[in-house]
Image 1 (spheres, helix red, strand yellow):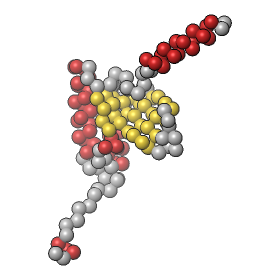
Image 2 (tube, one colour):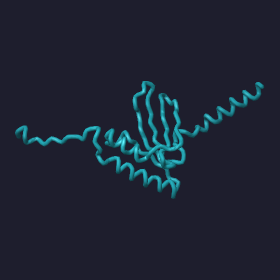
Image 3 (cartoon, rainbow, N blue to C red):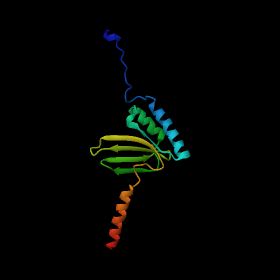
Image 4 (cartoon, rainbow, N blue to C red):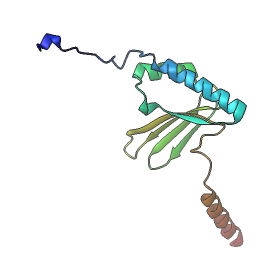
Length: 135
């Protein structure tokens, strides 16, 4: 076999649309119907998808920005942003050094990352009780 007999495939550059963002948008639409009709939530791991930077930009532009944005400090900075479509959230997680560790689209009434854990609520109630008792 000669060198010219070896087929070579090139990957699209990061500034080209691959068409994968369209598939993600369709999946988000199906998940939003499931949330509206059956109360089912879902999440898409964007890091596990073959999306170019152009795909992410295209998806960001199509989903738009909503009214709610939250910043969380969970072993690094996390950003939760509502899109222009109620119930569709864009989540970005970074470690302590600011390196991207996860990026997701979550379809849910409230992102699963946000609600307080029951143990934390019990601890908060206890702390507030001690504060009141010290007044």
